[in-house]
Amino acid sequence: MPDQPSSGPLSGKVTLVTGASRGIGKAISLAAARGGSDLALVARDREMLDKTAEAARELGVRVHVEPADLSDSAAAAGAVEGSQRALGGVHHLVANAGITHDQLVMRIKPADWDRVIATNLTSAYAMTRAALSGMIRARYGRIVFISSISGLMGNAGQAPYAASKAGLIGLARSVAREVATRSITVNVVAPGLVDTDMIRGMTDRAREEMIGRIPLGRLGRPEEIAAAVAFLLGEDAGYITGAILNVSGGLYM
Image (cartoon, rainbow, N blue to C red):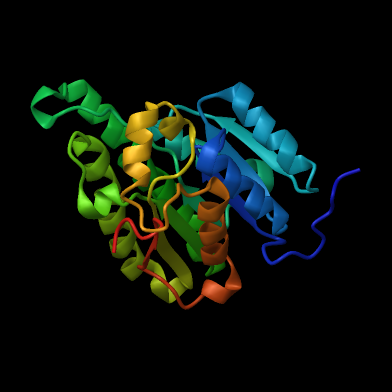
């Protein structure tokens, strides 16, 4: 028997989450479902996406799955349009999808640079553009971009990733100014080091060195990032736009 979220703070809304198949994206999706929001889930990995969808449906919400390669901006926009048709609209957009190709800038191949920028930044533009028409008509919307403290402080060996994440901040602030009069907010969550597959793939030594730089002395949990996003999607955050919420355990101050 599904655990019905009945009248949660996000009930009656549809939240589209990219990169929803695992890690932070999965945690954001389930947090929105616990708040009562129906979901549109977007990622490349259909099998993992279906697992997120199954967990969300157990919470009693409608779920639409849109497998897509977000490095293709047409596919990114199409995922929004398909979700709108399936669920009757998209009220919240959470652009979380991201890849990295770590390498010194002098060694990065142009194709690798282009793929990181396309997936992390251009897809957010394409999906925002596709979602905004419905939000503007409804005079309501919430857009949250998942950036990174790498976009705030830079990181050696992560030039394309840091550039894409910094670009999300500029995009958010510009769009926030354009659509504020329609009661649409656009904000950024900038996570620090979070316990996801990307971090688990590091050597024990590298992992401990990174943790040693964090004032709180531990990695973040995906659920902690999801809680920040859920707050920005809710009515209590209605007077916040163009903001960057730094969730890094003090790594960036």
